[in-house]
Image (cartoon, rainbow, N blue to C red; front, side, top):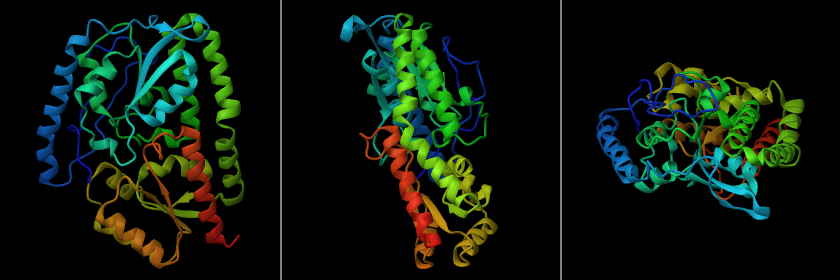
Length: 347
């Protein structure tokens, strides 16, 4: 299911001159699994070229960060976008009525790792006064589209740079509550840079998001950690690792297995045997499954967990449903995990 977007090397930063952070190392997220994946690289390169060609005419007409239409109360409305809707949701809420936000990937059935951008996606990126990319090799197509349409006044927020995750690290930073805080701060700073005249408004939006928007999300994290810290759990891939750490859960699945599934490589026989033993021996209380990245090995583990009476809790990489807010989506998953942990412990 998962294919590599680009070979594992440094991403082309192009002419991305405006950023809220310092340049950093980025790397592609996936390694191909078999010759079929390697053959797809040529097709993906063609898709990236199509994006570049489709938006070249926009390169000199991208809106200036301080430009835009008038919003409610006479304020400026700037255009902004994100590569995935997890960050797009934060951007929309922090920007409020002063930002017109769009996300490139919005379909819960889409695997962001092997996404092939369209010319329309390229135009969305090219016409943005502010753009949020995940980085850490997760969305290399976004960096290429930015490089194909340079705008020295565009504000670019690279999440990997913001949170300090280097090449080879876990790219799923929206599953780290502390990183979500850092990115929210960076987005607010970026919006104020793009539209200095509305800085007070953006500060108020940030405070509202923290105190009201994320209240249930933070409460669930605190509640789960207080009651279930130390509980051994398993997972299908590395997407859950940052949240498991925040919750104080003991994620005992071999890290090399989690990384292999996340990157689209074949786990070792030893790792497979370890995970199988953890499930059949009921060494884990809950198995957390990323439904947007299911391989034959993972599907088999899910079935084994169900047969063993181990609750399976599902997570996704993008908002589900697509129209949900970040906090509603994450809170719903946390509530499901909380229920699974309670079921496992008979409480």
